[in-house]
Image (cartoon, rainbow, N blue to C red; front, side):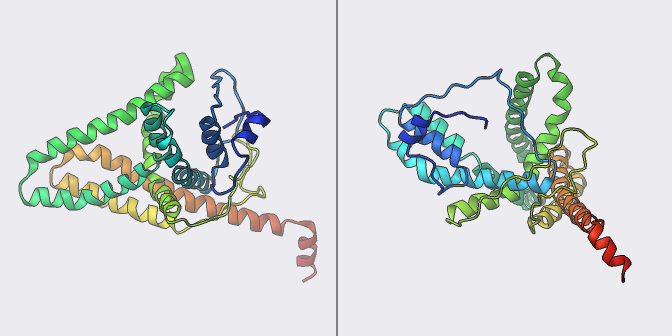
Length: 294
């Protein structure tokens, strides 16, 4: 994001290629394979607009996830076979390009929670729950540590004020798991799709009304699936409390909030934009004149 590349760098790396949805990611890897070095300027700020519409956010995340896997399929064989690259660079490239597989693994884990809790309770394996809780806690703490260190690095001395957003970030990351897993499978199966730009609304203050702007983003059935999964985890939470697996409750609350928030907000934002578009169309002077003449 906000990268500046020399023309000679782009040309020597093979130019812009359009076989992935993340052309910049693809080009940056090809450039590094050609020996070019990148310099990260931490203190050089570049203004950008974050998506204010949940559907736009999911569309952006879908494109990035799918594009990263497409780039991995295309570039990783070259990286892994490059004798001049150290093992540490190859491992880092794998983690970077294949990171979106975590969403698929997360969905598998979540789908197993209910049957596992049922069988453990039925067979009296409560002791195993504590071991499992230890593993889950260790994984969760590593993610929390990542967010905390990032917050401290970005916000400096006032970083503690932003810690309240860490649980919400984790919940949101869970909520888009279905959306991003879909992107991963599309990339693996070689399904081609158009480059959908992230809608921009030129929002600069809280008072700006982005719902009447011209950009639109499509709604998909994934929103209903996310909402359904969130409701199922409400039942899972109730079941966990009923059988006494209290240690699971905080994780289950994050999961259900993430899916319900993502799915419900997608539906609400989509409906609001449709209504705003209709009202904007009706309010046009030409149309109002036609209505008065009826």
